[in-house]
Structure formats: structure tokens, C-alpha cells
Amino acid sequence: MEFKPGVDFAKKLDKEDPLSSYKKRFYIPEMESLNMDGKTKSVKPIIYMDGNSLGLASKDVEEEIKAEFERWKNLSTRRSGIDKKAAEYQAKLVGAEPDEVIVTGGASINLHALVSTFYKPKGKRTKIIGDELNFSSDLYALAGEVRLKGRDPEKDLIVVKSRDGRTIAEEDIIAAMSDEVSVCHLPSVYFVSGQLLDIKRLTKAAHDKGVIIGYDCCHSVGVIPHKFHEWGVDYALWCNYKYMNGSTGAIAGLYVHRSHFKETPGLPTWWGNSPGNRFDFKAEWTPTGNAASWHLGSNLSIGFGVSPVYASSKMIVDAGLDKIREKSLKATDYMMFLIDELLSKKPYNYSVGNPREAEKRGGHVACEHVEARRICEALTARGVLPDFRPPTTIRLSPIPLYTTYQEIWEVIQHLKAVIDNKEYMKFDANKKESY
Image (cartoon, rainbow, N blue to C red; front, side, top):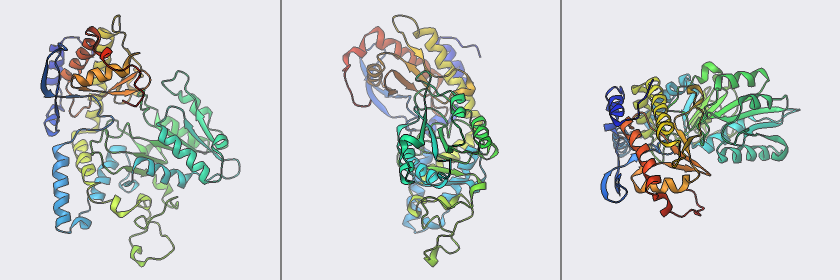
């Protein structure tokens, strides 16, 4: 749509927002922070732009945790079925069959569990494809799995390079899918630039070349619709504390296409054993016949870790993932428009580093500036919480369920003011630790 730069237009967008009622279901912290003049302070609600790192707490989650405590207190926790209910909602969010999804483990643990299952170096097929822009923990895990199979990561881990330092060309990924590749592991969305990969296209390309392909979807589940089953994705994993708003200790999610249900998990556990003979305590492991075979332990599958995931997943399904994606694209379009219109010229010199096409963009804007680190600190002093990614990226994530268009407009005014007032110069330019 055609945007306008004034605050009245932002207010108009908020009045038209079909998701506006959800904001009141979240807790918005307050802090003493600088006002727009850069001199006076007041206690006011923060403007939270870091929901792609950690989602805000909701009243829905609070109530479900209280309900879980009551279940524990009354010893009815194990009979609640909360883990299965959460998985059913998560399956809807990723376009999977109900028995293809479980809630278990953490993202890195689930990555090990899945890759250890599907990476079977044999004959010529000894290699795993990764890429240099994926989150580093994924590359650690891929190299570790190569070593565990007695192979050398220097030879058997293919790391696809970026052409521009921001994005990965899908053509380069496909070109790397030789007959020597066993598994290809990719992110759905790149955590710095926000690039969204075409999962359908890449999955077909992999299968055409006999390659198993899986995805780390930590930066897409809860904000971007997926169709894992329809697309034939072999496996996927995700966390539930970012766009899913499932709390810091939230259990993660895992998907396995039903065509692989007969596979023996690389990390078989007691809780992943068939419930029909689980209590026979036999040495021989028996599959469940669905994704539950990849469960990593009973205490990771029920209780306080999964309750927030259930509540948050239900909220997102009820809100409608298509509506969430629609607002996310509209909000990031609006933010990019304001950056271009108000901040791209001297003396501000901000730029947009993420792909602009809707089909290639995740849920955040990668706002770039040579002073990104210090600008992030100056924004925080103003009560705007962004996220810094070295060397020059300010990640700004307008979360559809609790970010207003007026807040987006105000963030742009704050970005402008920290340059006008030279507030960023108050902070250490040589600070080395992560922001």
C-alpha cells in the first residue's frame, strides 16, 4: 500500500489493525528512560523491538503455568495430555500432520537428534551441506555429527558461501547438492539479514538429487506459515521463545515427515519408546510409529516447559497465522518506508539490509548503520529495546500481536534523535562483548 510519513497515518493503520486487541494480553514492562528530547526522563512502557530474540510474557501463558502448578499439586500432570495438545497446535503452525510434530528438547539438542538420525555416510554420500550465515550453533552441531560418524568436517561439511555477506543465493545451495551429499541443513530465515529461503523449491531440488533436507525454523515459526508435509520436508526444528512467545524456558518443537517414521532415532530414549511396552524395560528399543519416537525424555515433554508452548501456540492459531504474516509484512514494509523516507540521507545514513521482496523476507528489519552498536545502546536508554548483530545491523522486529504502527513510527523518531543529539557518542565505541 502507499504509506505516508506522519504519525496520523500510523494511528490510522492501528485503527484498521484486525489484531490490535491482542496487545492487552501481553505484559509490557516499564522503565525509566529518556524522552524524545534526549534530556528529560520518565517512567513509561518500553517499545519492544526484540521479540525475534525473546517474545514478551502473556497473560495466556501466566494462566496456563498456574493451571500446570495446580495439576502438579493434584498429581494430575501426567494425565493432562498437555504435550499432545501443544503438539497439535504446533502442527497447524508448520503445516504438518498431527503425528509428525512433538514438543521436546531444545533447538540444538533437537538438531543433533535429527541429524544423527538422517546423516548416514555411505559410499559416495558422506557430506553435509550447511552455510556460512546460519546461526553458529547449527554449524557446531553439523561438524560434531560429522565427527561422531568418524568423518572429517574439513572434508565432509560443505559450507555454502555468501556472495554479499548478507544473503545466501539459493542457486549456490542447489549447486552444492551433488551425489556426494547425504544431508542438507539450512535455516528457514537468516537471523541477521532476515532472508527467507524458498523451502518448497529447495526441498524439491534436494529430493531430485537424492538428498535429505531439513530446516532450523527458529526465526520463522509463529510468524510465517509453512507447509512442511505438503512440501515433503524431511525434518525441521524450532524454538518456542521467539515469535512463539513461549517463555525463556520453553520446550522446543520438532517435525519428522511420516515417510521416515520407520527410522530409528539417532538418540533413542525411554520416552521415545513405544508406550505399549515402555514399562517392560527391555533392552530392545521399539518405535512409536510416529514423530514421538524422537522424544528426548518425559520431563522435557510435560510440565512447566510445555505449558507456555501450549498457551502461546493456541493464541497464535486462534489469531490466525495468515493474519499474523499479513501484518508482519505490512509492518516491516512500513518500517522500511520510514527508514528510506526519513533516515537514509545525511546526516542519518541508515539503510535497509534485508531483502525487500515479501516472499524473501522474514519477520524483522535489518536496519544498518556503521554505529549500530552504540545506536542500540542509545535506543535502550530511550526505552526502545532493539537487538544488535555485528558488525552493523540493528535488528528491529515489529511483532504482529503486540507492536503498534505508532510504535514503529516512534522508533524511527528515536533513531533520528540519537543522531541529531549525538547520544550514541556517549557509549564505548570499542566495546567487544555482544550487545
